[in-house]
Image (cartoon, rainbow, N blue to C red; front, side, top):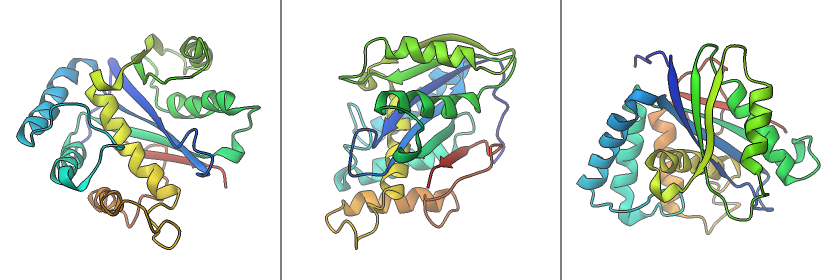
Length: 234
């Protein structure tokens, strides 16, 4: 697969998984990235897949089910084959966030996600899934922290919240990090979670197979372009 350079203006669509669940040791914060001028063609391809499978509204990890199984696998096939759409996530043991509370941990994890994905000379537009009950001015604080530690020559054109139901690429990010969170928190292990969703276990296996991995419990070199995973913590 040939990965084209992500030069000039790029969009980054972010989401988070397992963040507030006290029973899961790992949280996952992740995003998909594309060139800004390729966004409409990429979303158009995704909308065509939705049309083919009769999916009219929002999709994501929570709604992944057997009756929509062919659609979810088609989205994974499409993502893996889409040279213009890249993925990165940070998998974090919540005990190792070096922070005073969950909200501070949010900033630590997002720094790890974004800082090592930004390229000098590029301009970025960052969109976060809007969350209920988050601290006021959370995005303003994150933007200031991101701008303070950006690589030299980068510019952050915007950082704002969006409704996931209105943003298809946030939904793609949600699906991919949902798979990662399910695997890393051992929900794919029937001995630990006998009531886990068989289809979601199957979907995790399907994504791993498409990536050429035995499972989704892996990390990559920082230079990995298509499906980049940074894991820290025990």
